[in-house]
Length: 315
Length: 286
Image (cartoon, rainbow over all chains, first blue to last red; front, side, top):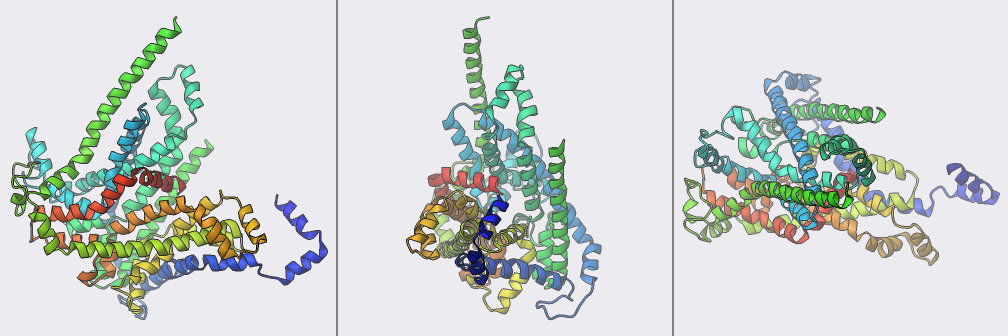
């Protein structure tokens, strides 16, 4: 195709000389003008801040770019700070649990909804399960801090009390706080994943199932050997998006656990650590160093997950 | 073997399966909905203004609108909502213009370096906001635009995902429309605005939905950028009020939370199909 284009340009000799004289065509000029807002946006709000953060991370704690150089001290500080490692541990703990539970539950939910014959019910369930997703994280956190009230007056404690379970200190007991956040996250994100899975399920070719039915496969076999393998790229995609979002957890833990990530630091996350150092103790150098380390973690995780996808395609 | 009998049987078992599935999913949706219902009903419970009632109840003991009155007088909810609307509209206008112009240019103008622009946009999409927030904060502090809504409108220029959405949408539109209009003497700007922009309405609607939900629900950047309580967005105002743990007022906080949700919930009830489609599209496209 491209060679065809080239030859068609070369043939008329006069044409080429005219083309060479005009370096920018009318299309080029318009193209640059049309892309200018985006390019300015990318340079000023992505590239410049990335470089700025890198420079800051090598500076002594300062609120401007003019401070003294700190060498690797900020990175050394963060990497030896037990609070940072605790925040990474908490972030991963809540992240892995919510991604594993969230993706598998929503996948099951999506297949259930997809398999109902009645279109009206299907649309109804899509709507209901997705509803929590439009609710802000602020509202969700406020709502759940009432539902998860540690006293017996909390709705959830009352319900489990009916079957004889002692009240649980959901957000106030360090043993349960992280898991309670996971439950809350599931409530919020289940619908989002489900909608995307349903969209993907409709794209599975029907004749695959029909061929399997001829061979006598039941629904479980069809699900295991056709649906899951066919949707694997989407599953991996959901895991990647979920992981990246989980690494950035801030709003809910900040509202529920405060800047100390209470109870007992069990809700301290990496972004909360960055926020604390940068905006509460004005140590922008340490905060940006921590943000680069977090970015490194996200990058490695994303690459590993993408590689698992590629590997399976070669099998 | 009679094919008719097995056919009837399988149809009957499919119907049974449908009923079981619907039953299971109904129970599940009840679990999803109960938190909302409880919040809305408790928000009308004047008796719960100082303490969450025990044993928990759904129906208010002292039904009253006074909780809402308090929410609007103690917390300037109306002001926060207006602020959020201003921020959302500004961000949507700026980001959509930036996205649809650049998406069109990459797709149809095929200028020198169009692919580089697309690659640049796609790669910056991977940079999380949390990475850039500190330098961005310092930058706005330096040019004295912190604590103004410009700190929301300007970064909206960088809506790379929108560019990507617009580009793949415009790819499906015929390029011959542009050529015909050019022959008729139209300039590139007119071609875009008069011919292609009206055809882009579906993808613009998708972007409006996605951006509105993102901006309306955001907390982190408002928390950093806004200092004056008068300028708070709804999420920041609500967060700051409920952050004060010495002031319990449960049913008043729930009234305020309910108010903060009304615009999105109302929008959702009316545009449910489009919102669900937009989210599905954004997931499949990414």
